[in-house]
Image (cartoon, rainbow, N blue to C red; front, side, top):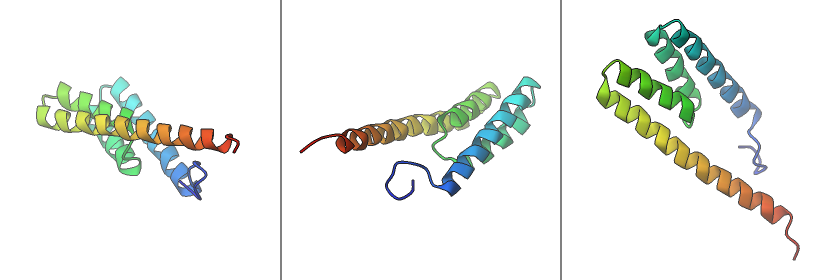
Amino acid sequence: MSHGSGMPSRRESWRLERAWHEYDEARKDLARRDADSAAAHLQKAVEMAPQFEAAWNTLGTIAYQTRKYARAEEYFGQANESRSLEARKRTVAKVRYSFRFQTC
C-alpha cells in the first residue's frame, strides 16, 4: 500500500495485475486439462501476490486431484491464511474509512 491511503502502489497494482493474468492462464490450462501448466501459472501468481486466496485454493484442488495430499493441505492452509489476512485488511480499511467521516 502506498502513503497510507489504502490504495495499492503502482508497483503493487502491476504485480496484482500480473498475478491475475497468471491465474487466468491457469484457468485456460485447466479447461484444456493441463494441470502441470496450470500449477506453474498458479505458482507464479502466488509468488507475485502471496495473499491470492483463489490461486492457493486452485493449487490445493490440483494437488488433491493428483493425490498429492500433503501439498493440497499446505495450499489450502495458505488459502485459509490469505482469507484471514484479507479479512483483517478489509476491517482496517473500513475503520480508517469510517474515521475519516467522524466529527469531533
